[in-house]
Every structure is written in structure tokens, then in C-alpha cells.
Amino acid sequence: MAPAPFQVEFRVLIGPDWVPLEFLEGLEADAVDMYLRRPSVTCCSFQGGFFIDVGGRPFSDDGSKVGLEQP
Image (cartoon, rainbow, N blue to C red):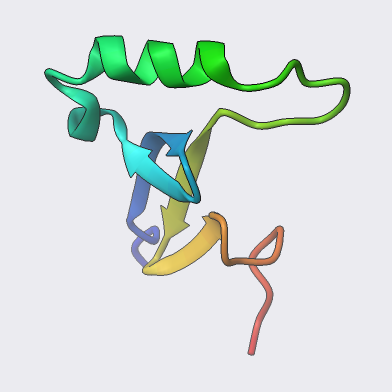
């Protein structure tokens, strides 16, 4: 059996959406300004993360459960 395809993409949180870094090309200054205007975080705040897909199933994204669960 061939191994399942594995894809990883790094995304950052902009407003309510996780966007790939390519989305920010040309908007870097705006993104930095947005982060600097945010209130200080006192606990547990993700601003970026790896989105992992194994065999067409999300492993770690904003809408998946942690781990690969069988249906």
C-alpha cells in the first residue's frame, strides 16, 4: 500500500480567517499594523500555525478534530 499524500501549509490568522502566507504578499505592513493594534494577549492565542492534510483528510485545521479519526 502506498503512503497517503501528505501536505503542510503555514497560515496566519487575519481577522476570523486563516490565510496562507502568499495572501499577505504586498500587505506585510498592513498585517504588522493589525497585530500591533490588537490588545495584549494574556493567555493562549494562536496567530499562525501549520495546516496538515494526510490522504485528503484534515489533520490539524480550524475545523477538524485533533488526530486522524476513522469514520
